[in-house]
Structure formats: structure tokens, C-alpha cells
Image (tube, rainbow, N blue to C red):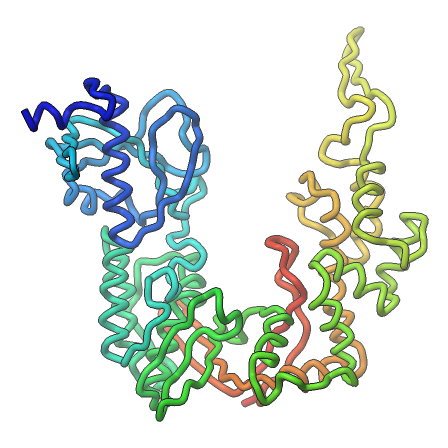
Length: 470
């Protein structure tokens, strides 16, 4: 009787094939989340029962332990145009325990979309952004000794990359980082050139923490929650004192927002009330702190009366100081609007190509209007020129041109450096290439700074890069 009841829905009806697939989806979701992998929510395509989550490879070993087989998706409809889809099938009856146990019959199927970046149509890249960071590997919020960090990271890698050699190869880097040397050679790994930057940038935080404990004699390290500390990647613990470290990838490190500098200065009691109003760079920082990325790019050019904004104002037929986001949005849309119907004549037939009142195809009207300005100051990429974010046509070039202008201003770099050096922080640079891994470290107060920008995408505000002195 109990077995019979397990095949009934809550309404007392016999479950349908759809019910079984829904139960299987729930079973897979619970199993995947228990392994530390995050489910990606998706309601499309409507009416198709499927589940989305990232996993390197096709997960056959992982799913075999769940009594599931994995096969290619071969239906005549599309679940995802970007990622690879698979079919998960129960290889035997699966029981879901509960007040009323549910039995998923052998042969029940559910679709799985593998949202791992290596499964995109372009392929060629194994790791998504931050997939190898301490936060994503469940290492944040705890304190670790050297051996414990290596052990915990190895276990986390096995959970997140259950198939193939990925976890094993990443784990092999951990003991290599446990050295006093600043350069390490290792056997060739089965990663592509696209993977090494991710290993350097994200996994580098863990490798740098191991290297720091060994090389700088720290007893322990701890990784803060990502949302709490924008500039600090880990703390080195020595004599019960926490020393903040920032990890940057590559020989010189990546770009960091100016806001992060200010947050770190304000977060330290000794410098919380520091007055930098006399500094030239403080005028820039004030704008960056108080306005959105798009607003600040316009305002910085206006503040310093740059040739870029003056030239743009002539094209827009207004004063430089009258340019704001609202005017940019309305002006670009107006310029890009087709003024009258455009036809193409083929023989005796006329074909409507563009209709009056619509935005021009591939934005050719706006492209033509800004062509000389773009060419002189910062030509956008083709993808931008054909996109529908018309504001980007102006804000993007303003952002790309402002930081070189700032860095060339007499005294600006020195002023930014004086402000940034108030941050009590040690930076570690990790540079992972195909066969070598290098480390270096220095205090912020021994570095030189200059303005930089990570680009329009993602709403990046004005940032900086730092150059360590030898």
C-alpha cells in the first residue's frame, strides 16, 4: 500500500510523466546544491521542464553516482541558443524520502542546460568569471593554516569539478605555491591560453595566500566575504594581527575602482578623517564618488574643459556644460531616426528598406554623424556601433579618453599616488603563464598610481592601476 501511495500526487491522482520529470528535477537540484554548485534560475522555454547549472565537462561520473545517465539533447526544439543541453535519465527507480516518499521510475528524463562557460557555442574557455575565487569555492569567511587551506581547497575543487582532470591539475598548483621562491616552473597543464588568465586572476587569490604564509611567515590567512571588502582579498594573520592583502593578476595587476581606495581609507581609523581636499586628484575622486559611471565621464570632461567635450558640443550644437545624460539620450535617438521612407529599386519594383520614424539600420545615421569625432578620440568597436545602446556611442569614447588626459596633467599622478598611499595594504601580484607562475609583493605606500578604466560594460567607474617600485 505504501508503495502504491508513493505514486500518487498530493491531489490523490496517479502521477503523470510530467510529474515524474518534475520530481527528477527536484532530486537533481537538491543533489547539485548539496555538492556546492549554484542552480541558475530559468523559466524559458515555457513549459519545458529543465534545470540549469554549470559543470565542467558532461558530468557523467557525477550523475552516475545519482543513478542517472547523460546523453546529448537531440529534440527538434531549442532549450538554449547559448549553452549545450543534455538529457538526464534515471537508470533505475529513485526514491525521494519524505512524509510521503516519491518513487521516480526508471527511464524518467529531465533536460539539463550546462551553463558552464566552456559549454557556450564558442567554447574554448573552461572557467567562468570568479569560478575559482575563494568565495565560489566556499572558502570565504574562515581562517586557515597552510596545510588546512591546501586540504580544504583540494576538497572544494573535487566538489566543483567532479569530472576529468580539472580538479587534479588545479590541486597540483597548491603545493607548488608553498615556497619561498618568487618563480615556479611546473609541468604543462591541459588548459588553453584562455584558461590561464582565469587561473591567475581568481585562483591566484588562493595561491597568493599559500605563498604569503610560506614566504612572509604568516601563521594563518582568512578570506573575507566578497561583499564586505572590495579591495582586500585576504588577511594574513601574524601574532593575532590581521594584515590586509590585495591580489592582482599579471605582471602589473588589474584595474581597481577609485571608490575602493576611498572606502579603504575611510575604513581605517587612522585615516578615516583624512582631508585630501587640497589634492588635485581629490577633485576627480569627488566626482567619481558621487555620480554614476555615465554621469562622471561627462562631468570629468566638463570639469577640465577637455578638447573632447568641446568638440562634441559643436557636433551637438550646445554648450559643453549643457551636455548631460538626458540630452545625450535624446540627441542620439533624434540623430539616428530615419526622417523619411527609404526604398530600394530593383527593376520596376521598389522595396521599403527603412521606414520614417524608425531607428536606422546598424545605426548608420548616428555612426556617420559621430564618425570624425570617434576617429579622433576613441573609435568604438563594431559591436557597439551596431548595438541599440545609443548613449554608449558618446559615454564610451568619453571614458576611454578621460584617463589618459588625467594622467598627462601636471601633478595629477603624483596627487593620486599620495592619496592612494594612505591605504595600509600589501599587494601580491600573481602571474600564471603556460609553464610558469611568478609572485611579487609590496606595500601600497611603495607604489605609484595612475588613472585607468575597465570599460563601459558592467558600469565600471573610473579606476586606477598601480606600479610597484623595485
